[in-house]
Structure formats: C-alpha cells, structure tokens
Length: 338
Image (cartoon, rainbow, N blue to C red; front, side, top):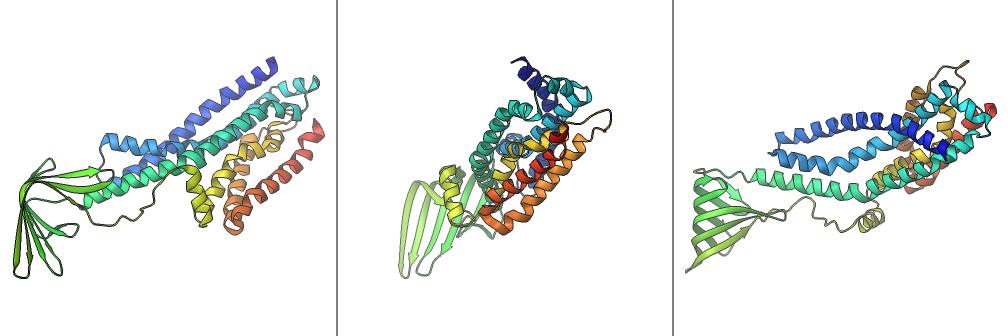
C-alpha cells in the first residue's frame, strides 16, 4: 500500500539521524568509561576495540527504544504540522488505523531489544568482565628483573633478566610445612591460556628437601600455574541457563526487569505516540519532542521505583499502569478530535 510506504519513508528520514546521533554520544560515554580502565590495566588499541565491541549490544539497547519512540512521535507531528494527517483522516483513516500500520515495526523492534538485552548482553558482559579480570591479573604479575621479594602465587621468585616476556636465570622458592622446594631454570615464559597464567620453565632443576632427605629432579620443560583464586568463577553456558540460575537464586532480578520493561517500551507506548503526534497546527504548538522526553523520564522513574519493591511482579504491573494511563490520555485528547 502506497500510504504504508510513504509513512515508513517519513519514519526512516527521522529515525536514522536521531539514532546515529544518540549512538555516537552513548559510544563516547562508554569509550570514556573503558579508557578509565587504563589507569589500572594496560590496553592496546586492539584490546580497546575488543572491549568496545563487547559493549555494542548495551549501546544499541540503551539507544534504540527511546530513539524509535521519539522518531514515531516526530513523524506524526511533522505530518500534523503540514496538515497531511488531516487529509489522511478525511479519507477515513483514524488514528487507530494509522497506529496499526506502525505496530508490526514496533513489534519487531521489541523482539530485537529482547534479543539484545536478554540474549547478548549477559554474554558480552561476562566476556568483558573476564577480559578485565585477566588484564588486572596480568598487571599484578609485573615481575621485574633483579628485584627481591616478588611473588608468583605461592612462590617467591627472582629473575636476572627479562625482555619481551622472556625471562632468564630464574630462581623460585616455596616453603611448605614438611618440605622446601627450590627451582632453578635457565629460561621461562609467562603464558596466558584461557584466562589462566602459568610459567613455562625450560632447562632447569628442582630441589625438594624433607628433613634429612634431598631430592633433585632435572627437567627440560615444566609449568607452574598461578594459585590465586579469581573473584568470579562462574562459567557462562548460554543465556537461558544463565537467567534460569540467576532468577532462581534471586540474583539480577533488577536487571531482568529493566531489560524487559525497556524493550517493550515502544510497543506499550503506542497510544502516547498518537496523543503526542496528533495536533492542530492552527490552534496548538508542536510540543511533541518535549512531551516525549517527559514521558521517557516518567517511565524510567516508574521502573526505578517499582522494580525494586515488586521484584518480578513489576513485569506486568508497570505495563498495565502505563497502558491504562496512556490510553486515558489518548481518549481525552486525540480520540475526541479525530
């Protein structure tokens, strides 16, 4: 239908400039947050880009729903200011029929937001946290040559020379209750494998002393693993098991509520779009953008207030309140006139 294509084209002209502008601003905020980590860890450009890519689903999620809502309102308000909605209405298309044209897109956007928030964001947050923990762990093992008192896990370590992660002439010592262990190695490398740090020792000897007994072992290659515990040992399998486990343990309920409620915002705000977009330019001023921003603030405040007090019940309480309130506003404004 030509009218559908025309309305979609009008929406596209408004949506993309707003989305890319907000996407750019949000990206800058996330980049500043990532850059602040350089005070704790060292990041190369590729690692900085990797961390940014982990944050892309979050950036899109926090940008898309409100961009789509404002774009729809501006599209209808622009058509109203140019008297095009008045002409369309005169042909028998009331606001509800106009709304039905945009409903499929609103539904698709809602599904996309749910996939981003509930599907991708937990995984990317886990990868981001794992990566940052690893870099912090590497930073804590900034072992320098010719310095005493340095440790690798439970081992005291001394090296004579270090260059590009290559260590020469290492001495390691560990004292246990019943024995002492002393290792001498000509060369070694610090290895990062799947988030675990270890030393690969080459061409060395191990001395183990127990009371009156001394044991010597010669080796060509030996690995010593880091024995420090990590703060978060949870293994991420898939998003379904992640949320099932978190919700059953009453964890991350606030995040789950926020993700779902923000995702469905464009869909449950359909009557608000009609209320703000329709107006008579001869008698009224175009306040669509201001009204949209106020509605977004009210909705977000409502989420913050209710989601903490009602747990998962907020998933149906807030949409119900919002739908009733928005339909009441529509009934007393746009529906009476059109």
